[in-house]
Image 1 (cartoon, rainbow, N blue to C red):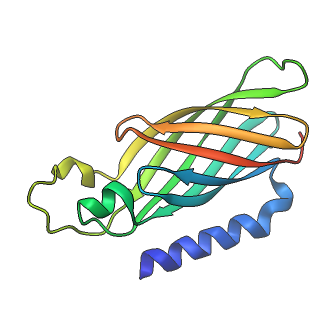
Image 2 (image 1 turned 135 degrees about the vertical axis):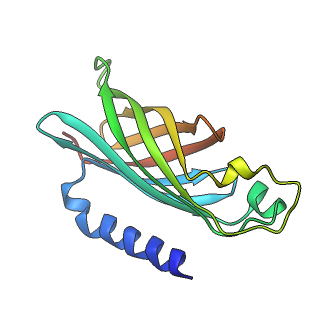
Length: 150
């Protein structure tokens, strides 16, 4: 229950600070049917992003793991603008909060909370889309959002 309250608090803080973000996304993780939010922002030309997601289904439910929360922060590495679009490579650090499991066949390494992700983001006039993959867990994430501009 504490994890769910933490997730709600983080979601509210992201939505309250939406004015400072350059892009806000809704995220989906197919592995656990997770949903979340992501925000991109720039500080003196340095691109950063943060996201939080929650999933309790899919492969995690199959292995009797409850409440998968993923917190991410990372950098946006700019690529050259092309045809009116802004492109970034994303590199982030993930922290996973997992509930317990009674499944004896489960690899204990899944409970390592730290991992990293790599991805790609494209921002058009007012539309933004991104794809990210947690490399160690092989968990993809798709972000679709609204671009406020730089």
